[in-house]
Amino acid sequence: MSPARGKTRYLILGLLATEGPLSGYDIKRLTEVRLRYFWSESFGQIYPELKLLAAEKLIEVLPDSSRPAKRAKIRYGVTESGRRVLRDWLREPAETETNRYEVLLKVYFGAVGDRSVTRSHIELFRARYEPLVEQLAAFDQQVSRIAEEDPDHLHVLLAIRFGRKVYDAYLSWAAEAEALLAEE
Amino acid sequence: MSPARGKTRYLILGLLATEGPLSGYDIKRLTEVRLRYFWSESFGQIYPELKLLAAEKLIEVLPDSSRPAKRAKIRYGVTESGRRVLRDWLREPAETETNRYEVLLKVYFGAVGDRSVTRSHIELFRARYEPLVEQLAAFDQQVSRIAEEDPDHLHVLLAIRFGRKVYDAYLSWAAEAEALLAEE
DNA sequence: AGTAGCATGTAAAAAGTTACATGATTAT
DNA sequence: ATAATCATGTAACTTTTTACATGCTACT
Image 1 (cartoon, each protein chain N blue to C red):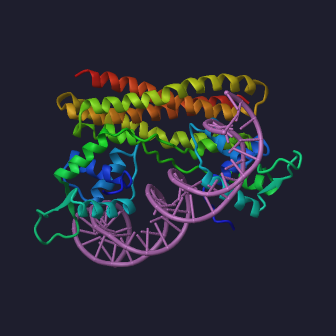
Image 2 (cartoon, rainbow over the protein chains, first blue to last red):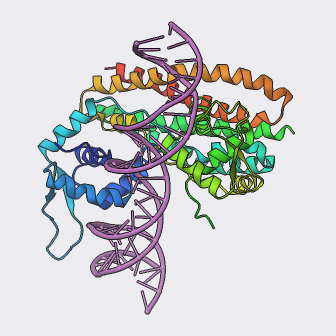
Image 3 (cartoon, rainbow over the protein chains, first blue to last red):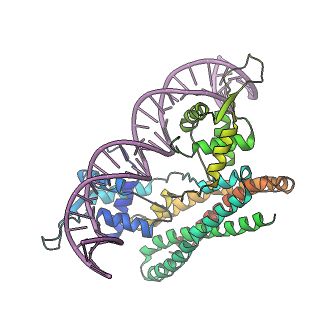
């Protein structure tokens, strides 16, 4: 029926199903803080997709519980059929990821320029991820504690662990690369 | 002047500068086998970009050295101004990468479905990267030896090391995740 | 009064993939 | 003969980003 648009819909459905009712803005913010190490989404995708999902009755606008005064914020909730669509998608194999690291392209072609340029790219790269690694370590501790009581949180914990492993790999590579580049 | 189109041009310029004259097909093939762990490019981007670069005189069509009989294959070489454009780009800071792992989205929302589904996603993920890790290890050995004599190859080696670290992180995560999911 | 953050949305542009068409060459 | 791979290219489509417009609320 609906021609399997992008994955934005599953992000929305998934967040609504696991976090409860949210606005478009909430979805953006949550994605930025909690999913940033494996996903990203812009407003330009979220808002139109919310409209579409609502038209398909996979989500619905929930009545604003606050006094009629307040305006603007629109809270969406996932419907039963939305949950079904989410579960169906969950069962399908994931697409293979194709990542593009511009910084690696610059490193790979580094011989065309100065070695100092390559060095500074790597330093910048490390500087970008260092604070994220620390953040994730703290986040891991929090969620680990929660997961001990609520087994559903194991999934979130697994995602965090993925982020940690990958970001640690980034830093470890940067350190090794800096050492190899210094040897000259 | 030219409004900083995508990064496809720098891939082309970079490969031409480091590998010598190549055809569009060569560029695609090289990217697939040697840069696949940090870059990808489709024919739909390469061929039009080659035309554009040639029109801008950043690359040029080289005379076919083979007998006039053979047709089709078009070899491009980078020009002096192409090299300059490449070096300029090399000096600019790299954009921040935003990676999207559909498999992680499925893991993160895993609590909505069955745990066995999450498990199979992780198994598939591991199966995808296991052979690549081995390939990269072999590739590392080869390039390491070459890099000892030719210091320019250090850059290629660094890129391979990046791939190894990241793919190792994938496998290490998959192993840990499988263990944690089995505990129930 | 002004700024930052909350909040929704759209239009245009850019980037990227996919599917197709075409034909030569090489290996089985 | 036929299948695989080499080789170039285009059109349509999908996806994604960016830039803008609008207005409210909370804080300084």
